[in-house]
Length: 273
Image (cartoon, rainbow, N blue to C red; front, side):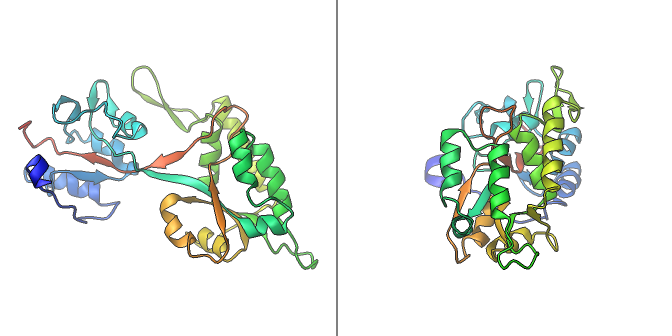
């Protein structure tokens, strides 16, 4: 780094995800920022912009805002008019659907079926429900479900359903103002579908926060929605597994990838030099 760009840098864990904004604000207001670059969690990005403490990166010749290096969704969130107050590299975390190939086979399904449906463009809400019905099984005929189709996470399932149908919870108008988009037809259809899916008892509810992956690994459920970083845990399961995108809704012609990552911001207490 020094030989090529004439500088070095070091990344340090200076605060938790939910206290980084406070550190950014207090140290910047004091005139002595705790760091040259702060990584702000997505849940606090708007607050960071509204604080008025973020440097407008669009004014810096050293940063190519239009580069493919930056994640477009984060850049859009951090943009106000012609000003860009934060960026994120394109290796953001992605939310995906993991499936147990052995449980697919035991349910009479091709273990590569989700891959084939995705490749053909037929990986839809309807197909997902059909597969869920076959995966949910009472294996010993005692009247109690032994294997569920999905280890359920309300937040992830409902948000993915909305995005997969070209809906959104919040949208931005022509004046760069955010507004509530819950009443849009695409969003309402997705929420109704997700709620209806939950009434069919294909899903296994977690016993505690984050236990969905454990239920998937211990083959209590054949599928789970998880962020790609959770592969570090899932990869240790004994069974072979596959990974596909979330199935698409009737108002979408393409698959949707949910991404979420922190924005990198520079305190505006620094000069352009």
